[in-house]
Amino acid sequence: MPVSRQSTRTRRYSVNSLEGQRGSLRTTKETLHGNISIRDRIHHFTLAWFTCTMSTGGIALLLSQTPHRFHGLQVIGDIVCILDIVLFMSFCCALIARFTMFPKTIKSCVTHPTESLFIPTFWISVVNIISNIQQYGVPHTGYWLVVTLRVLFWIYAALTFCIAIGQYYFLFTGKPLTVQNMTPQWILPVFPIMLCGTLGSLISPSQPLNLALPILVAGITFQGLGMLIAAFMYGPYISRLMTAGLPNPNTRPGMFIAVGPPSFTGLALLGISNDLGRIYPSYTTISGVSDPTIIPDVFRILALSVAVFLWATAFWFFSISLVSTLAGAFGKQGMSFHLVWWSCKPYFPLMPRDVPAESMEIQC
Image 1 (cartoon, rainbow, N blue to C red):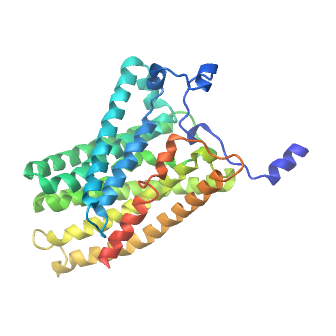
Image 2 (image 1 turned 90 degrees about the vertical axis):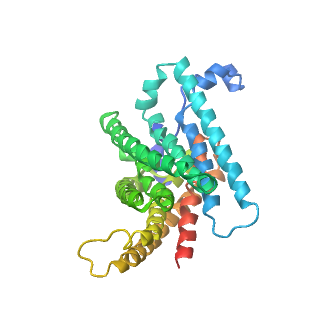
Image 3 (image 1 turned 180 degrees about the vertical axis):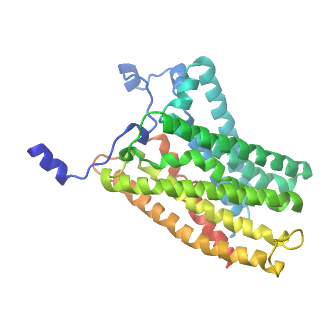
C-alpha cells in the first residue's frame, strides 16, 4: 500500500499534547490577525511563562559564578538579577489576575496534563532568586539576611518536597500516558527539590558551622533524590526518541531540559565538598574514621570524580538537543516561537554545563 510504504521511508517526528503548551483559544478571523483582547491574553497566561524568569535568574547566577571576571561584570549581574525579580513579580501579578478573573482555571492549572508540568518552573524561579540574593545581597548586608536565607531554605525544601510528591501523584492517577508521550518535561516536578543541593552549597558558606551542616546534609540528600528520579526518566525518554522520533520542531528546544539533572548534581557535589573543609574536623567528625582530617579531601576527590562523568553525560544531552534543534530550525517545516524556547536560554543548555566545568577547573 502506498501509505504504508511512505511511512516506512520517512522518519516522522511525534506530535502529542505533552510536547507543548497549547492554549484553548478558538481560532477566528480576529485571532488570526492578532486582534486579541487583554482579557483573553490574561485568560491564557500560563505557568509556562515562568520558564522566562527561570532562565533569566540562571543567567544572573551564571554571571556571579564566572571565575574569569572583568570590571563591570558585577554590575551586569546586578542588572540581570533585578530584571529577573521584576519579571517574576510581573508574571505573578498576571497569574493572580487570571485566577481572580477566571476562578475555574485554578483547577485546570493543577490538573491539566500540559500546564501542570510547568508548575515547577515557578519554584525554580524562586530558588534562582534565593540563590541570587545570596550571591548579590549577602556581601552588602548584615547578618539578618543570612538568617533569612536559612529560613527560606528550609521552607523551600519542605514545599518543593510536597510538590514533587503531589504532582507525580496527579500524573500517576490522571490521564494515562505512554512512552510515545515522553518528554523531558516529565523530569520537571522533581527539579525544584533537587535544586536544594545547589542552593545548600551556595548559602552554607555564610552560615554558622552548627547550622551549615544540616543544610549540606539536606542538600546532598535531595540532590540524590532528584538525580535518581531523573535517571529513571532517561530510559523512557531515550526509548521514546528511538521508537517515536524527535519531538515537534517547535518544541525541540525543550530537549535541553535533560541537560539539567546531571549538571546541577555535579555542581552541588563540588560546592558541598568546598564547604566541608571548615566543618570537618574542626566542628564535628564521623565515627570510625581514624584520621578525621582526611574527610574533606576524600569527599572532594569523590565529588570531582563524579562531577566529571556527570558533566560528560550533560554534554552529550546538550549536543543531541543542539543538533535536533538546529535540524528543526533549518528543516523544510521550520520553527515558530513556543514558550518552551526559553529552555534555550543559558539556564538549561549553558549554565548547567559551563558552571560545573568552571568549578572543576577551579578544583584542579
